[in-house]
Length: 207
Image 1 (cartoon, rainbow, N blue to C red):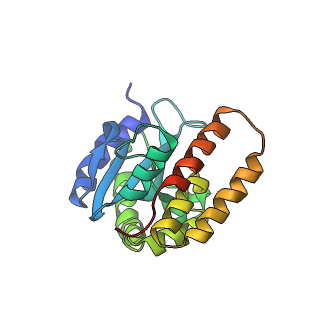
Image 2 (cartoon, rainbow, N blue to C red):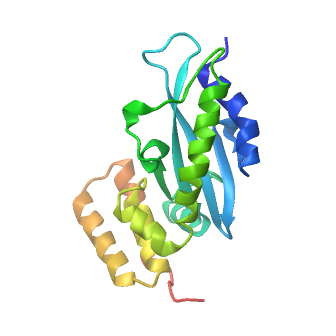
Image 3 (tube, helix red, strand yellow):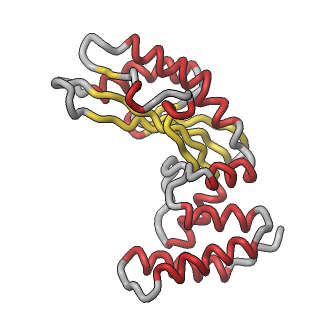
C-alpha cells in the first residue's frame, strides 16, 4: 500500500507545477526560482502517528534559499553543498497563513487526496508565495533570521551580516558562539571552529 506521503506527492505534482514549482527529492520537496541566486522551497514534512495505514498529515515548510549564503556556509564548514537543502530561512505554512498547528487540514490517504491537495496549493498561493517574494533581499532574510525563522543561524547569520557589510556584528556573533563552545572537542565544536577560521580568513571587501 502506498503511504500518505506518496499519495500527497503524486497528487500535488501537477497543481504545484501549475504554480511554477518543480518537484525534487522524489516529490517530497518543491523549488521555484524567485530571483537570481534566490530559490523558494517547500518541504513536505509529515506525520503518521494516530492515523490508519497509508494515511499521513502533511506539514509544509516554506523557505527561501540564498545560493551565496549556502555555498559560503558549506565551503567554510568543509561539507558538500546540497542543491536544494536546507533553506536559508523557513517557516511552517500553517503559521504563515495565520492558522494553528492543530488546524492542519492536509491529511492524505487512499481516496482522500484531491481536497487536501487543492486546499494546500491554494494556501500556498495565497500566503506561501508572497512570503517567499517578500524575502528575496538580504535585509529581508536577516529580518527573518532575527525572528528565528532559520536553521543553524549561528552559521548563516554571520554570512548574511558580512554580505551586507556589517562585519563588526558578524565578528561579534562569531566571538559569542566561540565563547559558548569553550573547550568542547566534539564534532559539532570542531565544525564550528573550522567555519570560524575560514570566515575570518575570507576577504569580505566588495568585489
